[in-house]
Length: 200
Image: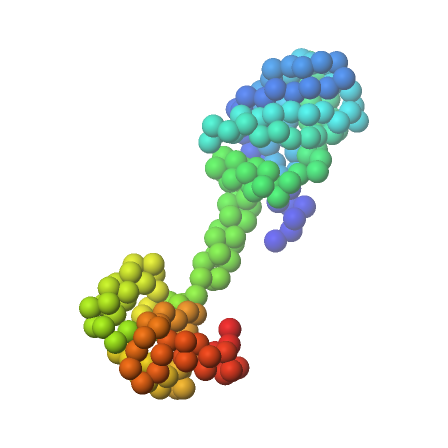
């Protein structure tokens, strides 16, 4: 997608603005916005080329402080500013405003961002190995871990946990009872630290 085309896609809005320049502080209205800048409807005496501070009241209810350079005057209707030093957060907020007011390219940007976030979510659940020789405790720990969104693999003692680890290293965490028959929890931890597949 062409960034210049995205930036030059103005949409009509009606947002409250308070701006301050060399001539003072003024209440105004924003009548048009794009990702590159906006048109502020004001009778204030701005100077072409001047950088002004202004706050805009977004539809979400928050006020955002922005910086803009006056690039066009249409006295007494208002003036156009080009955004200066936009933070990433403010750029995201402005994209949402433009998209909410019908900006097709801004809507596409948001869709692509959402798609990227969705593609970063793993297809399968993170797995946790839980080992305890007390079946009641094993079930309780399993239920707790599952409520946190993990897939649980259970072992009824240290030896079973050891056999699972020898064959399967695809775990993001382990929970071991320290005192189990055959192999203690600490023995399993020592084994994992020496195995390159499991050391993480």
